[in-house]
Image (cartoon, rainbow, N blue to C red):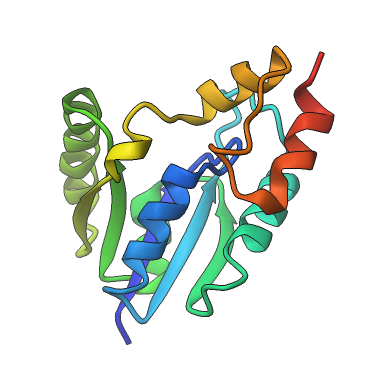
Length: 159
């Protein structure tokens, strides 16, 4: 079985994330969407809320599993036996950061390959921080996040 891990903070999941996850399911038998827990990062949604939003947003994708992990991604990948790490790229600046992470993960002995998927052109500008800011000012986020979670985000972030 070919297993890939798609890590991120997903605070919240966006249609850009969902695009990458959906395309990864065409390449792998199982895609683990991994909510990375970083105590140094201030998130708008709890880990449990993010997991729930991802599960509802990916319910139609039967080979998707959602998990959480606090620690090194390389350790999680090795523990699960995944053969790949899926990362979405929007711009060259994303590549520079992600390339550093690839090199670090290789040094940490993971045997998994990192696969970069470029986002669909309609999501090039889209990020979780953009969604949070737009929602915080009462803007319409329906075009940017899965329909299943719009109300959750609005309830939390509209000022």
